[in-house]
Amino acid sequence: MIRKEISKISEIGKALISVEGNPGVALNHVVELLEADTNQSLSFAKAINISENSTRFQVFNGTQGLSTHTKIRMHEVPLTAGFSYNMLGRSFDGVGNVADGGPEIIFEKEVSTRLDTLNPTVRLVPKQALWTGIPMIDVFNTLVKSQKIPIFAGPTEPYNRLLSQIAQGAQADIIIFAGIGLKFDEYQYFKEQLSQSGNIDKTIMFTHLAGDSQIKGLMLPDVALGVAREFADQGKDVLVLLTDMTNWSNILRNVANYQDQIPSLQGYPGSLYSELAKRYEVAADIEGAGSITIIGATTLESLEDPVPDNTGYITEGQFFLENGKLKLARSLSRLKQQVNGATRNDHRPIMTVMASLLADAEKAYEAAEVGAANDAFSQKLLRYREDFIANMEEPFGESIELEAALDQCWQILKRHFKPTETGLSKKLIDEYWNKN
Image (cartoon, rainbow, N blue to C red; front, side):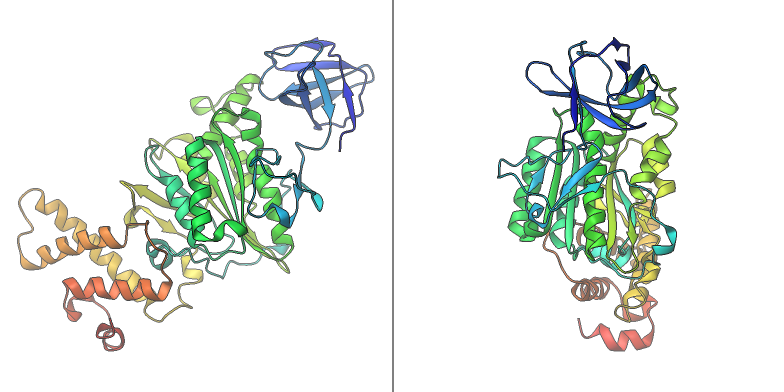
């Protein structure tokens, strides 16, 4: 709700503006800056100093382009987002405005985007799987409701396609897609794939395109997560897909530089860790309510880059996308043991055996590169490795349920090994070997 507009700025600095008196804002209140003649949104600013004679604001992306006639609008858009079940199937921009050309939505309520810390006493121990339909995740690195986990990938890897694949198969009540710095064709791809899968009716898209205001990109995760928290409070299991958190961190770096904050490693602000943690820590299984699970794509050149390095300390494992494959050796779900013991009785054993055989196969592959690994069992391992990469580490295709994925694991083992070569127990061999 709009409260008031001021049409005169008394002082403009590099990153600060001042107005006379107190226009009715509190400390840390966020206001919007508008072009005087067209009312076009220019930026947002935060009240950082209030005195009897003046109020000073810190402008998020610098004061270039502002004049003393720039309007200051006091309203709740940057700190709240509209919420309604009518948002399902629709697309919005970084501050929650309708962005798909459809009709405006009458929101049921306004929800906070400040992402205040959740009381630890209402967090439940994660204990329910969130199935994705992707064997490499469901069998080997099971995703758990309320988990926070990144996808680490090089900039040219199909990480957005992987997020789309997860969205199409995920068994969640609500899917919230939050894209920062997307190309328009990437946005269209997500929308088309979700529509074809039938999941569009339980999906909300928040998108910041590459040419949009940086500030909308900065705010987008908070808006998306604020809406997610409200759905979770109403008992829904929500999956939030964030991409690309490196894009978001780069916007954060730009804003910090505009504000003359002292830079840390590679120019990122010293608060990078806490800023990332603030978003990822929204993930929770909430007592008496639903859950929020977060998967955040993070592009990288090296794991030592500041964004993936900090992300790794915050999150609970990682999915590693390399050469278009989800690599078992570099991926880890630290919470999988919470749930994979309560599935089919062969889940844990076959996961362990196949991973062990793949490790042996990688050694055989390295030996083969120097002319070794010519014995019969090494040749079996090499053929197994090719089969595993093609069928297990391949994340794209039709979604399959866990039972079918486990059966596929048995089929791979049967193609390359004798029962006694697998290391599986006789009981499991008797139960499953001839079944598949």
